[in-house]
Length: 313
Image 1 (cartoon, rainbow, N blue to C red):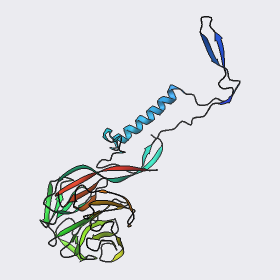
Image 2: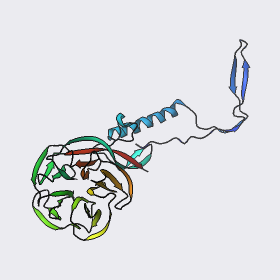
Image 3: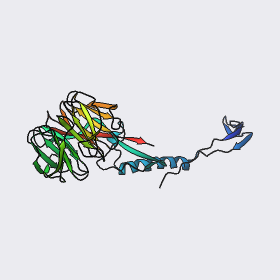
Image 4: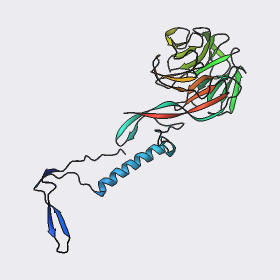
């Protein structure tokens, strides 16, 4: 049930601070309010009204806790997200808010990648998927953990980026300079086409169009659907774009030269925020709906980043 706010009304009138003094004869006096005129009595400052405020605050806090949106470890950092929060339609004190996760450089947890040179990540809604430059393999993880439930050889020799379109895995290879559409999450390839340039090192999918980046041209490309045709392109924020993901609103990229992660304004070259990657060789990004996930070629680790929630009224 939504909180019904009290409309507090000020007491108005004349001589509202006027009091009568009564001498009790024992050195004490009684004061009795005696305004000359009260035109509006105002909302009474009562325990009932104050307890209504306290109850409303408590109910809102419990509601946020029950939805996994806050805990005591984040009281000085903002609102905490969990793995599966509900972002739409949160009503707090009678006001409905939209909540948007906002990626940060703080690390929630990390684990070893399946091999020694992770270069790409994507998320299928349940499981993390990674690829490795050294082993030439693609790994289906068990949730977001180091354990993996399946693996298969990449289409060519040097897998460098992954995306998931809701049905099919998409990979790119820096040796063949090709982009491959897989049959589901298998090694079977249903289609392939040339990447926009000679060194594709990152892929993501925005729900309509594939987005890729190229390490040597320093460009980010918006494809026409899942095809070789390019709708638009722009310079990456650094000199060596090495990974991409999309959070539902904004493109996020990482750069192996600057060792930074960049939050774009939508799908443009404008950067609204940036922060250092967990180590020195970020080569893959994905977003699980709540948390940014990155991998590092140098540490051979996968990092789950903490997220904050932005309240959008």
